[in-house]
Length: 445
Image (cartoon, rainbow, N blue to C red; front, side, top):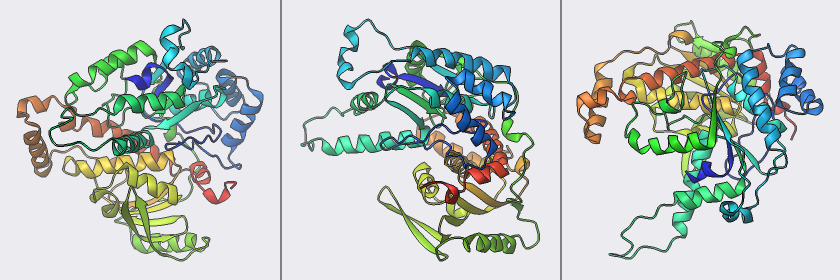
């Protein structure tokens, strides 16, 4: 709660169109290096020019429309206009750590934050990044959910390690580290732009107001107080023009999505790997990555290129921290044998969704083979094995079958919407522009 009670918050639910090159900003622990665009990209060029000649988000948006890099979208414009007002109200706004405790004794109140929600691919991340790139607040952060939560867990671990060891029979009451960690984060930023707020916290529908947050979620009563706090400190606005801009017609980067039924598909992908590996100053070999004290083995890698099977990435107990480490080390990943996802493969589907979310955020390029075309890779069917898995979880949680029916975690509703985002992103990840943007060899050191 304290995290959102003092810093200004701009919250974006579900990721979008594409990132439009806000300046690279480094923050401790959980930086989101947002869209370091290759100089060759036309959108990157227009965006760079806009940052030089425009004085705010609205001018920036209109500049991109005039250059033909964006089409005029009244829904996006409405949100940009609200962000423009927030931009103006934040001019000169700053809080120093010394003022954190004095906030209760001053009449100056921080401007309200903004909660932006809407369907996939409609431009929420884009408008937030335009806003962020023009904000002159001294201490600002743009964070992605996965990186943010990993950082929070690291801070909690560090704090607990610093506490004196409990003696038997003493300090029976458990220590809650959330409040001091939240205060610590609040002292680091007076503006927090938080992307993909819903991940693992709340099941968000394509049109999701405050009241729908985590609807039908497990133990929702524990989440409801947070909704009241969010209402108090954030205005809300919907961005939903009904268009998924990631699926618009754009030049393809070549064939990057193969069907496992195609002749010699493994040989074709191996040949492509070898051709790309020849440009790397390295040998093809296994690699070991360190992830929070664990070892993550990459059986085949060369320079910034890695090769995995789907089983290696999503059948094993890997998570966001593993995928982030892969994304930090490689800008191109081959993924073999992606299956058709059913309810029986719900766990693997969730890992794959997290994988794509992480790779997309870090501009990692993917070459893959799959059992079906992208539009038919997710099938909602209740197979017995999936039901057995659900029954085990229901037993562990002490839920009856009737009470579990109302929970989205057992209906597949969460996965359906999340996979719409995944398909949207994978579509954009096959474009020539995305391929150029993700080539780290072209980035200045």
